[in-house]
Image 1 (tube, rainbow, N blue to C red):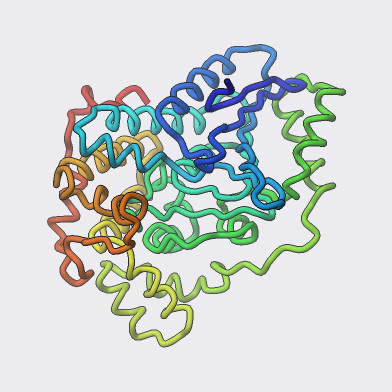
Image 2: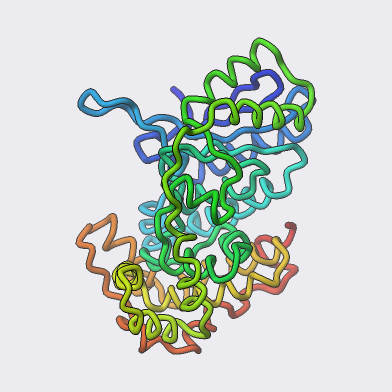
Length: 371
């Protein structure tokens, strides 16, 4: 049987394929552990000069071509069930996932993410640590965690806060889907290529291997230029950068919503409509997260987010958790009617937000103390 990840070394390039296509390659604990073991092993392997991460294709439906997705995020159904059962595996998942993401950020060899289809949540955690992020024509990128009563974790505080101006606040709170042009425009991808360009690149490496990581990256950049997308869609996020800055740089979530309500543009109405389904509390927590992370080193961001995710399940336990309720509404009962507490943005109190940043462990006992 094939495992949840597939690996091979092609002409000096270690290729990792996420292999849960029916789940859109969503990460579970087994995948996180296997990925970590492979990357640690390859970091010392003289036959591996660089690493590429990609997703496997979902099988064709009704005669249509197979669709490839990079990674839809973490396995939120597992998270829901484990938290309700009091299973400590949910704690292990977040600790080990964040450690894996940090490993990619700090990896001693060049890393490449080949981004096709859905690239969200945990998939962004893998991709944003890579040195070269290749966006393709099918890309659907987002950090939509506030929709399930969570916050943009997996280092989201780091990479969102490094976007220009208040774009990070906007992306984290609202969670819009970004296509290839958007990802390039906001700095969450580096280059664009056709999705079918990867196969001939790997074939070329098999025939003519490289003997250095930077040489592989340089060769891929040339290959990408030769297989560039002939037509890119117009960027949508940067088309509204002035409005994003005007609204999402305001002090509180309540200020942002009030400002959007007084903006009668179609974009502002759409933005408010998107926010209407999200957890008011976790949108406010996300605003605080991104702003705190802006002045933090990477390891400290991961430790902060590990503390925050602990609070997501412990401040209000079991079915009372905002995260459990969000997952219930989206993927368990699928009624799409989450019962958020509080239900309105104007009722979110600052002390409720601050509680998510209260220390759980001293630094010497923190699960991510070794980052």
